[in-house]
Length: 163
Image 1 (cartoon, rainbow, N blue to C red):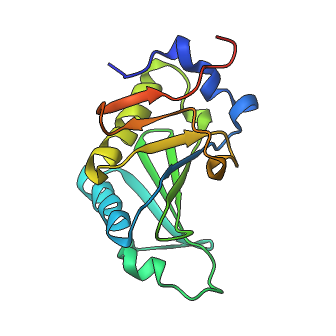
Image 2: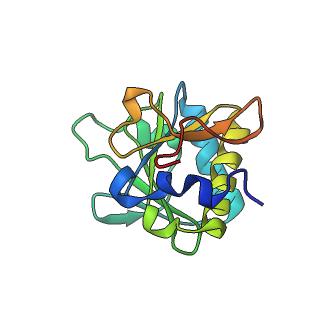
């Protein structure tokens, strides 16, 4: 069972309110943290696709991706922790693990449970909070929910809209 109840948080998964691809992030990260996430993807056997531009390539080490030339295109890693549940990691910097989740695949309690488990696994492995905010809002410091390290589960960080 999830840390959250769908009927109480559905507004945080509304495409019109949150955008199709809300931001999820881990602050104060390192290259080692990025590698830990890549290792989790491997260890859990989640389906994945690493892209440099439109070219699918084998998943490299985090240090290799993050040390690319400044004028190189930003690679992405698409991860499916379950069928139709998509997270898109973008290697923008080594100090923030930044990814989007596609809300079209996160509708209903079962999908919410998968999402909560996904960010919990990441947060536990890194020992750091994993936050979610509306699309384009992550740098404003207004997360709506996230994995809380001390509580060891996903918690609400804002009042759901319409609640």
